Amino acid sequence: MASEHDEAREANAGRSPARLTRADLVLLRKAARERWGVPDQLKTEALFEAAKILTTATKDRTKLAAIKALIEFDKVDQRDRVIDLAAEKLELQRNPDPSFDISQLTEEAERDAASYRPDERPGTHQAAPDPMP
Image 1 (cartoon, rainbow, N blue to C red):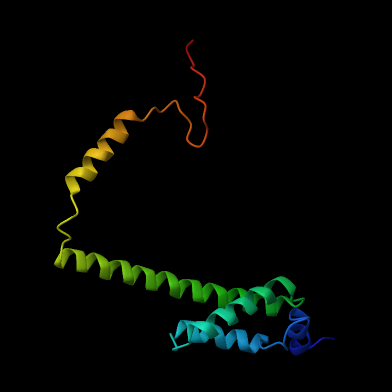
Image 2 (cartoon, rainbow, N blue to C red):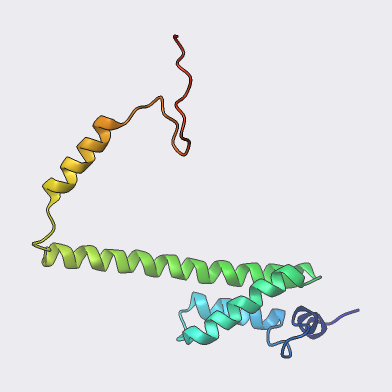
């Protein structure tokens, strides 16, 4: 019966010795959830290894730990993006960009809406057949 360490070594065949076991993946997930200051380089390598384990591991528990770690980091990235967008919005409200002309954007949107033909299918270069010839 293969141990977690054997399975991790198999996942890294041809590369340096495995660095992530199921216990490591659990710890990685905790680091994401609790927002530990994991350097980007280390996080990138760990996520790459977790994805590799996900595709090569034979034990379901190890795969599940990899999935949970990847999902947790994705959640953190999404939350960070929402926070960044909110900060950008607040900054624009406090210091509006004088070169931005909303009326020009509105005019462009109105022109686009006026030229839209619902019988044309997006992504194709042919019009849908006319139902009443």
